[in-house]
Image 1 (tube, one colour):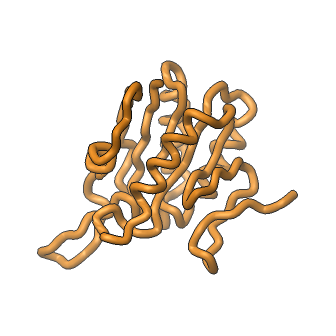
Image 2 (tube, one colour):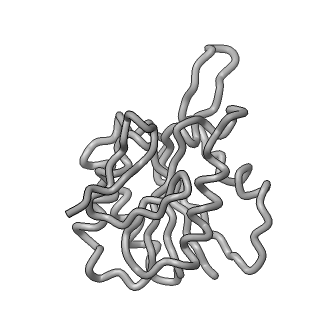
Length: 169
């Protein structure tokens, strides 16, 4: 299976800067996460789109992500987008609106509530679940986090449970 993983920053990729005592989106941690997993028969192409907190993302940033998804589709059996959770639903809705009806492969967005470098991170769980979902779900746009596979449209971050849900239509 061939998966393209697009990294955009967000909490999942924040790293701690000891000199400043701050968490920042300076680099991708994807290789570290993938290095801890057994992934036979999986060929991954990693594309850094940006290193940004999703709260700071603009419409132009979402257009860049959309263009990166579009560019990744040929030659990929699935596309995975690592994204900040605060505006993951907004980006997923944009991808669904622009590409959803024409997709021939799954596009999966995931992130984490706590940075990968934290002991109690949900990053490895969410990336693992997203990689498995990429093998199992039909073409479409999904959020995959916290043991849930949620098809767009209608996905939202539930700030009371600190997870994601889907609005019933």
